Image 1 (tube, chains in turn orange, brown):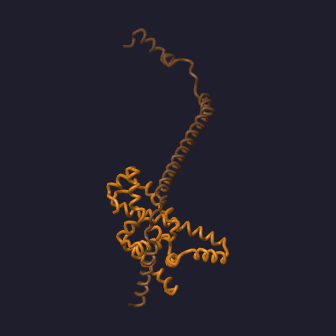
Image 2 (cartoon, rainbow over the protein chains, first blue to last red; image 1 turned 90 degrees about the vertical axis):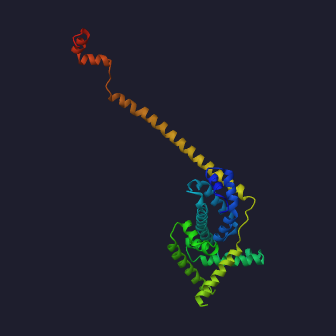
Image 3 (cartoon, chains in turn cyan, yellow; image 1 turned 60 degrees about the vertical axis):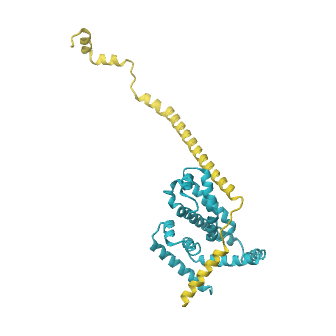
Length: 187
Length: 108
């Protein structure tokens, strides 16, 4: 826990100052998680604000302060999931408006402006995002939380409120699908 | 290491590279003010909805009252009997003897 239970209790009872302190303690971690879940740094702050906005209006539903972190992760996962769904719809309509040549030209123009390090990061990001595109948004987020964020099965169990065995099965299947795509791309 | 393990190891390495390529994000200066703006905007929107709902309810109640006044009350008046005498008069008319008896002291 990055803050003590007493601060969360104060935030729950409507103390805006306490809520501000909670956000300040968690924002860096949450924004990092969102960045890795959605893979688009330019939209991270917007999704992050949405997470804390939902937290502000749902804190009174929190049973006890002990479950605050899984609760915050659940809100993060839901906001990231909503974003990915919106993004997919938007991308589909945007891409259908452009010709293939226009898409290639836009990609090349964007690539030319970046530094080598940025380009390497972008390549890794795009590769992982493309591999994760082979599984559903729910499984993609679950896989990310486990493999990239390093959350344990116990922590995931609290976030998803699903038993460990069911999570193991979902994770195994999702990982197998990603591995298959990884192999098809020629490692 | 067999082929399956090798593939798994490569995938794990790629996930770690991805983690390193996207480190925790330091929020910009506009993050907190932007968040509070959104909180206030939602609060104002909820208040607006509540006020609008209250206005609609008041309007509907008023309209219902007018409808009742215009249509129902005249109908009720028509259907209800008109009494020209008082309750005591009606009682006396129903029981004339008892009334007289009480007055003369025949009923004890």
